[in-house]
Length: 261
Image (cartoon, rainbow, N blue to C red; front, side):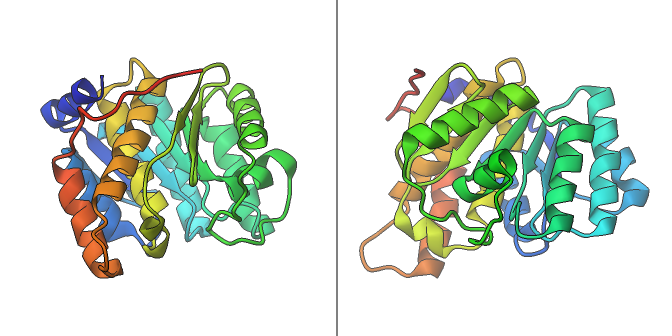
Protein backbone atom coordinates (compact mmCIF):
# COMPACT_ATOMS: atom_id res chain seq x y z
CA UNK A 1 0.00 0.00 0.00
CA UNK A 2 2.80 2.42 0.89
CA UNK A 3 4.67 1.68 -2.35
CA UNK A 4 1.53 2.49 -4.33
CA UNK A 5 1.01 5.73 -2.42
CA UNK A 6 4.59 6.90 -3.07
CA UNK A 7 4.45 5.84 -6.71
CA UNK A 8 1.28 7.87 -7.12
CA UNK A 9 3.14 10.92 -5.79
CA UNK A 10 6.07 10.44 -8.15
CA UNK A 11 3.75 9.81 -11.12
CA UNK A 12 1.37 12.69 -10.45
CA UNK A 13 4.04 15.09 -9.13
CA UNK A 14 1.37 17.19 -7.38
CA UNK A 15 1.79 20.91 -6.82
CA UNK A 16 1.71 21.57 -3.07
CA UNK A 17 0.93 25.12 -2.00
CA UNK A 18 2.67 25.84 1.30
CA UNK A 19 1.74 28.78 3.49
CA UNK A 20 4.32 27.97 6.10
CA UNK A 21 6.68 29.72 8.48
CA UNK A 22 9.91 31.45 7.53
CA UNK A 23 11.92 29.24 9.91
CA UNK A 24 11.37 26.09 7.86
CA UNK A 25 10.12 27.28 4.45
CA UNK A 26 13.24 26.18 2.55
CA UNK A 27 13.27 22.74 4.17
CA UNK A 28 9.55 22.29 3.46
CA UNK A 29 10.13 23.12 -0.19
CA UNK A 30 13.12 20.77 -0.42
CA UNK A 31 11.41 17.83 1.23
CA UNK A 32 8.40 18.26 -1.06
CA UNK A 33 10.78 17.96 -4.00
CA UNK A 34 12.63 15.02 -2.41
CA UNK A 35 9.47 12.96 -1.98
CA UNK A 36 8.51 13.54 -5.63
CA UNK A 37 6.10 16.48 -5.56
CA UNK A 38 6.45 20.15 -6.52
CA UNK A 39 6.32 22.98 -3.96
CA UNK A 40 5.10 26.52 -4.30
CA UNK A 41 5.45 28.93 -1.40
CA UNK A 42 2.92 31.78 -1.55
CA UNK A 43 1.81 33.64 1.57
CA UNK A 44 0.73 37.00 0.19
CA UNK A 45 -3.06 37.58 0.35
CA UNK A 46 -2.91 39.23 -3.07
CA UNK A 47 -1.97 35.94 -4.76
CA UNK A 48 -2.92 33.20 -2.28
CA UNK A 49 -6.37 32.52 -3.76
CA UNK A 50 -5.02 32.37 -7.31
CA UNK A 51 -2.13 30.06 -6.40
CA UNK A 52 -4.34 27.69 -4.42
CA UNK A 53 -6.67 27.52 -7.41
CA UNK A 54 -3.98 25.77 -9.46
CA UNK A 55 -2.52 23.64 -6.67
CA UNK A 56 -3.21 19.99 -5.84
CA UNK A 57 -2.96 20.41 -2.06
CA UNK A 58 -2.74 23.26 0.44
CA UNK A 59 -0.59 23.14 3.59
CA UNK A 60 -1.30 25.80 6.23
CA UNK A 61 1.29 26.26 8.98
CA UNK A 62 0.87 28.79 11.79
CA UNK A 63 4.49 28.72 12.99
CA UNK A 64 5.12 32.42 12.31
CA UNK A 65 1.55 33.61 12.09
CA UNK A 66 0.76 37.23 11.21
CA UNK A 67 -2.39 39.07 10.20
CA UNK A 68 -1.22 39.03 6.58
CA UNK A 69 -0.50 35.30 6.65
CA UNK A 70 -3.87 34.62 8.25
CA UNK A 71 -5.60 36.54 5.47
CA UNK A 72 -3.63 34.51 2.92
CA UNK A 73 -4.58 31.26 4.67
CA UNK A 74 -8.28 32.07 4.61
CA UNK A 75 -8.14 33.19 0.97
CA UNK A 76 -6.20 30.10 -0.12
CA UNK A 77 -8.51 27.89 1.92
CA UNK A 78 -11.52 29.34 0.13
CA UNK A 79 -9.97 28.50 -3.25
CA UNK A 80 -8.91 25.03 -2.09
CA UNK A 81 -12.41 24.26 -0.87
CA UNK A 82 -13.88 25.43 -4.16
CA UNK A 83 -11.47 23.19 -6.08
CA UNK A 84 -11.86 20.26 -3.67
CA UNK A 85 -8.16 19.67 -2.98
CA UNK A 86 -6.78 18.36 0.34
CA UNK A 87 -6.05 20.97 3.00
CA UNK A 88 -3.57 20.20 5.78
CA UNK A 89 -3.44 22.35 8.90
CA UNK A 90 -0.33 22.39 11.08
CA UNK A 91 -1.38 24.53 14.08
CA UNK A 92 2.15 25.21 15.29
CA UNK A 93 2.20 26.67 18.80
CA UNK A 94 -1.57 26.67 19.25
CA UNK A 95 -2.33 27.94 22.74
CA UNK A 96 0.77 30.12 23.10
CA UNK A 97 -1.10 33.39 22.50
CA UNK A 98 -4.67 34.55 21.99
CA UNK A 99 -3.94 35.74 18.46
CA UNK A 100 -2.37 32.46 17.40
CA UNK A 101 -5.09 30.38 19.04
CA UNK A 102 -7.83 32.50 17.45
CA UNK A 103 -6.08 32.17 14.08
CA UNK A 104 -6.01 28.38 14.39
CA UNK A 105 -9.68 28.31 15.34
CA UNK A 106 -10.52 30.58 12.40
CA UNK A 107 -8.76 28.26 9.96
CA UNK A 108 -10.51 25.22 11.40
CA UNK A 109 -13.97 26.82 11.30
CA UNK A 110 -13.70 28.74 8.02
CA UNK A 111 -11.31 26.69 5.90
CA UNK A 112 -12.40 23.27 7.24
CA UNK A 113 -9.15 21.34 6.67
CA UNK A 114 -9.09 17.66 5.74
CA UNK A 115 -6.07 16.87 7.92
CA UNK A 116 -4.78 18.34 11.19
CA UNK A 117 -1.16 17.43 11.99
CA UNK A 118 0.01 18.48 15.43
CA UNK A 119 1.79 17.41 18.62
CA UNK A 120 0.33 16.49 21.99
CA UNK A 121 0.71 19.99 23.47
CA UNK A 122 -1.12 21.57 20.53
CA UNK A 123 -3.79 18.87 20.73
CA UNK A 124 -4.40 19.69 24.39
CA UNK A 125 -4.60 23.39 23.62
CA UNK A 126 -7.19 22.90 20.89
CA UNK A 127 -9.28 20.24 22.61
CA UNK A 128 -9.06 21.41 26.22
CA UNK A 129 -8.44 25.14 25.69
CA UNK A 130 -5.25 24.81 27.73
CA UNK A 131 -2.41 27.29 27.51
CA UNK A 132 0.55 25.85 25.64
CA UNK A 133 3.68 26.39 27.74
CA UNK A 134 5.85 24.07 25.63
CA UNK A 135 6.19 26.31 22.60
CA UNK A 136 6.27 24.44 19.33
CA UNK A 137 7.51 21.25 21.04
CA UNK A 138 5.49 18.49 22.60
CA UNK A 139 5.50 18.56 26.40
CA UNK A 140 6.46 14.90 26.63
CA UNK A 141 2.95 13.56 27.19
CA UNK A 142 3.16 9.78 26.98
CA UNK A 143 -0.36 8.70 27.90
CA UNK A 144 -1.31 7.03 24.64
CA UNK A 145 -4.89 6.40 25.72
CA UNK A 146 -5.66 10.03 26.55
CA UNK A 147 -3.95 11.30 23.40
CA UNK A 148 -5.87 8.79 21.29
CA UNK A 149 -9.16 9.77 22.93
CA UNK A 150 -8.56 13.49 22.34
CA UNK A 151 -7.40 12.89 18.77
CA UNK A 152 -10.53 10.87 17.99
CA UNK A 153 -12.74 13.55 19.51
CA UNK A 154 -11.05 16.27 17.45
CA UNK A 155 -11.30 14.18 14.28
CA UNK A 156 -15.02 13.64 14.83
CA UNK A 157 -15.69 17.27 15.71
CA UNK A 158 -13.84 18.67 12.71
CA UNK A 159 -14.49 15.82 10.24
CA UNK A 160 -10.75 15.48 9.65
CA UNK A 161 -7.94 12.98 9.84
CA UNK A 162 -5.89 13.92 12.89
CA UNK A 163 -2.23 12.95 13.12
CA UNK A 164 -0.41 13.42 16.42
CA UNK A 165 3.39 13.37 16.25
CA UNK A 166 5.49 12.14 19.15
CA UNK A 167 7.55 9.20 20.34
CA UNK A 168 4.50 7.24 19.27
CA UNK A 169 2.49 8.66 16.36
CA UNK A 170 -1.29 8.41 16.44
CA UNK A 171 -3.39 8.86 13.33
CA UNK A 172 -7.19 8.65 13.36
CA UNK A 173 -10.28 9.59 11.40
CA UNK A 174 -12.36 9.44 14.57
CA UNK A 175 -13.10 5.76 14.13
CA UNK A 176 -10.02 3.83 13.04
CA UNK A 177 -6.66 4.45 14.68
CA UNK A 178 -3.14 3.77 13.44
CA UNK A 179 -0.30 3.59 15.95
CA UNK A 180 3.19 4.05 14.50
CA UNK A 181 6.34 3.62 16.58
CA UNK A 182 9.34 4.77 14.59
CA UNK A 183 11.61 7.77 14.19
CA UNK A 184 14.64 8.70 16.25
CA UNK A 185 15.34 11.10 19.12
CA UNK A 186 17.69 13.07 16.85
CA UNK A 187 14.61 14.34 15.02
CA UNK A 188 13.92 16.56 18.04
CA UNK A 189 17.20 18.39 17.43
CA UNK A 190 16.19 19.60 13.95
CA UNK A 191 13.98 22.68 13.71
CA UNK A 192 11.02 22.22 11.40
CA UNK A 193 10.79 18.41 11.37
CA UNK A 194 7.07 18.61 12.09
CA UNK A 195 6.60 21.32 9.47
CA UNK A 196 8.33 19.13 6.87
CA UNK A 197 6.10 16.19 7.79
CA UNK A 198 3.04 18.33 7.09
CA UNK A 199 4.42 19.12 3.63
CA UNK A 200 4.96 15.41 2.98
CA UNK A 201 1.38 14.78 4.07
CA UNK A 202 0.32 17.42 1.56
CA UNK A 203 2.08 15.54 -1.23
CA UNK A 204 0.73 12.14 -0.15
CA UNK A 205 -2.87 13.29 0.19
CA UNK A 206 -2.76 15.22 -3.10
CA UNK A 207 -1.87 12.07 -5.01
CA UNK A 208 -4.05 9.74 -2.93
CA UNK A 209 -7.11 11.80 -2.03
CA UNK A 210 -9.41 8.81 -2.33
CA UNK A 211 -8.20 7.51 1.06
CA UNK A 212 -7.01 10.27 3.37
CA UNK A 213 -6.42 8.01 6.37
CA UNK A 214 -4.14 5.69 4.43
CA UNK A 215 -2.28 8.60 2.84
CA UNK A 216 -1.66 10.36 6.16
CA UNK A 217 -0.69 7.14 7.93
CA UNK A 218 1.71 6.27 5.12
CA UNK A 219 3.32 9.71 5.37
CA UNK A 220 3.90 9.24 9.09
CA UNK A 221 5.25 5.72 8.59
CA UNK A 222 7.67 6.65 5.81
CA UNK A 223 8.80 9.79 7.62
CA UNK A 224 9.50 7.97 10.87
CA UNK A 225 11.25 5.08 9.15
CA UNK A 226 13.54 7.47 7.28
CA UNK A 227 14.23 9.28 10.53
CA UNK A 228 15.30 6.03 12.13
CA UNK A 229 17.49 4.94 9.21
CA UNK A 230 19.17 8.35 9.00
CA UNK A 231 20.88 7.95 12.35
CA UNK A 232 24.48 6.76 12.39
CA UNK A 233 26.20 6.40 15.73
CA UNK A 234 28.13 9.50 16.74
CA UNK A 235 26.89 11.92 14.07
CA UNK A 236 25.68 15.43 14.83
CA UNK A 237 22.53 17.28 13.88
CA UNK A 238 23.80 18.59 10.54
CA UNK A 239 24.92 15.19 9.26
CA UNK A 240 21.74 13.61 10.54
CA UNK A 241 19.60 16.10 8.64
CA UNK A 242 21.50 15.43 5.41
CA UNK A 243 21.12 11.68 5.91
CA UNK A 244 17.41 12.13 6.53
CA UNK A 245 16.95 13.96 3.22
CA UNK A 246 18.90 11.20 1.45
CA UNK A 247 16.69 8.52 2.99
CA UNK A 248 13.40 10.21 2.12
CA UNK A 249 14.45 10.78 -1.49
CA UNK A 250 14.25 7.01 -2.10
CA UNK A 251 12.48 5.50 0.91
CA UNK A 252 12.42 1.77 1.52
CA UNK A 253 8.70 0.94 1.54
CA UNK A 254 8.83 -2.82 1.91
CA UNK A 255 9.86 -3.06 5.56
CA UNK A 256 6.60 -2.22 7.29
CA UNK A 257 2.84 -2.18 7.01
CA UNK A 258 0.17 -0.10 8.68
CA UNK A 259 -2.43 -1.71 10.90
CA UNK A 260 -5.56 0.01 12.15
CA UNK A 261 -7.38 -0.63 15.39
